[in-house]
Length: 173
Ligand SMILES: [Zn+2]
Image (cartoon, rainbow, N blue to C red):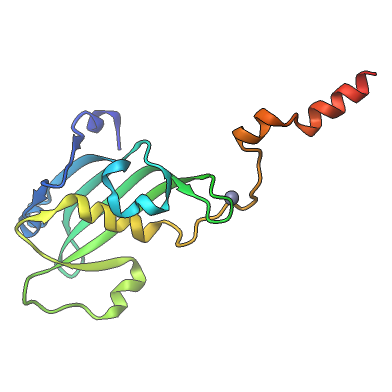
């Protein structure tokens, strides 16, 4: 996303909706921003709710002429490590395509899932925030963990001198 486009970023809330099929047919575009704190279903996985994610929603047609939404989401989250419970920074970088299925229409078979395409039911009032939230939920690790836990946490170093400081003192004598 370029700097120029950044100026058009709008904050979305629970009421932000699009007419999904029209959005796709007309090749429309929505640049948005959501605060991490708005993603309530994600809250249990997070160490804190700081920051925000930016996204870009594009209406398009795939090679077979199906109406699709392309959703890109970027930003960072502080997941909670399930082993040591301290924050685990996680970079969100999603680029997914959602095929719109008209209500009562035919759902694609499961082969679609292999190329990163999901199908969702088209709606004249498709809520944008849950869509972004769903994609983020699918993207984050199910059990987030540090590769190596136990890097010094702020609270510990306050009370205990680091082994390196102790070593440095010994060397000076
Ligand atoms: Zn950890």
